[in-house]
Image 1 (cartoon, rainbow, N blue to C red):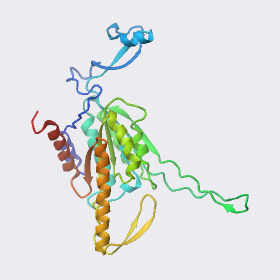
Image 2: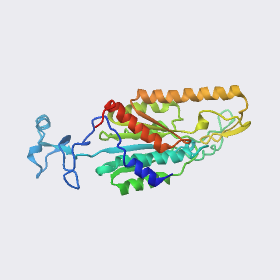
Image 3: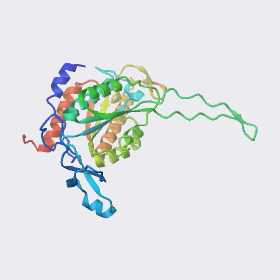
Image 4: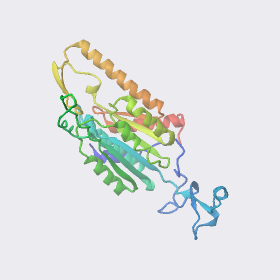
Length: 326
């Protein structure tokens, strides 16, 4: 997908972070490694050899035990991505599959945030696989034979720890790209909630998904995420998810459940209702993300994703600076 072109364009961009973060952009480096910094962090008990100038006297007075205040390194930004690789992203009718856009968006975020020793990590979710067969039947006290379906296995979530450096970021992207898209429905809300637990220092949280799961399932975790972090939601869309073409009888398969549906696309009323329902769905997604305070970027499989990302970053900076230059 034009790796050299993407490298050249992304190297000229800078992701705008508006929330006050722990140790973000506190000054230029004086050497190859950032210094200890002056941003206050957590307190811990005093150990012999600690600098007495970092004594935390309020905590020491409350606990009657000597404590020192830790500091956060300058220019240290931690970015976490929630990457949705459920079965619904293994679809595309234009230039790319939605899965390609998910990986491209993850690569762009890594390129934009990994500079200067910043760290980036990810949690990757996919389907639970082929549903388990029903359990063997048993006879009830009435003599009737009952069958109990085995509960579906939990959707797997791959956790990739946050590490600094371009080499580590490339390894993270390779792990994401090699993740198998499994059938079954993924729990997007649980995937996003993995970025909330355990609590992490303030940073950037990026959610990359098609957001086709019910809004009520993931809206609250996104709002919770936005309390502490700068949140960027990247929505991947295929044009056939917005409107149907007139191609006669069309057989559709749900990649998450395997259900088949035959649709007569020659019916203009059906195409109109489909477009209206799709518009309402995308509107609900946009409203939920806006209510959570998340920045919203939509990437389509029939457009240039890199140009869309450039426009998004430029619009964010223009809105923040009100058209002035820095």
